[in-house]
Image (cartoon, rainbow, N blue to C red; front, top):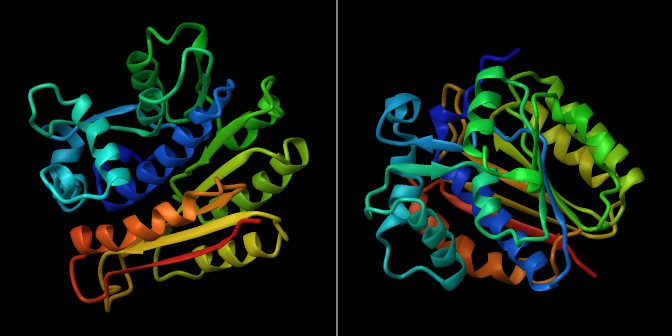
Length: 281
């Protein structure tokens, strides 16, 4: 199935959590001063207009990035994330929101590399347009990232951040994520892997989380952000989560400070909250 278009959801609460955490990880890698790769298995279109097109129809960004846009009291980590979004909106108005690859590009160094997969033909075309000047630093393939990543691991610098962010349009995606992670760890055990998933009133996300925990990973972090009480009808996404394998040692402390602020800024009712668990030796 290729009906999913992330543009409808660009800049929403899930994007805020995902990209905020992703940037914390990438900035940690950058401080090491050694080259690394950023690999995105489901890269999307790369950049999204918020004032027109798909994103303007549901305007989900209004309960996401727009709530942080003019907040003067953000902790430094969240303020840095918002400043990157501001850097893409040169007139000071919130019109553009970056996808994960564009967030990554903002912090990658000259020796770092991006490897991007996107299966949807329209989004793949837009992604190539967004990064048309990427040169040898950026490789884009119109391919299923679940399969494509195998040829990239281990990466030449032996350092990489991998974002696994499928649309979960099919229930089988939850199974594919676990299978791909197991295979990837066999090829490249020291990589840092970020798995994003939606919080839904369905069994599949919970089963995936249980299977991830059963992998016996030596180092991991799990964070969730709930923005509202689940619907009584059982439909819709009420939050999202990230499961991070081999996370930076300082990530838990950063999230401990930032997550209460995200709940305060993005919460829609009394059901808003967060969870944060980690095993970081």
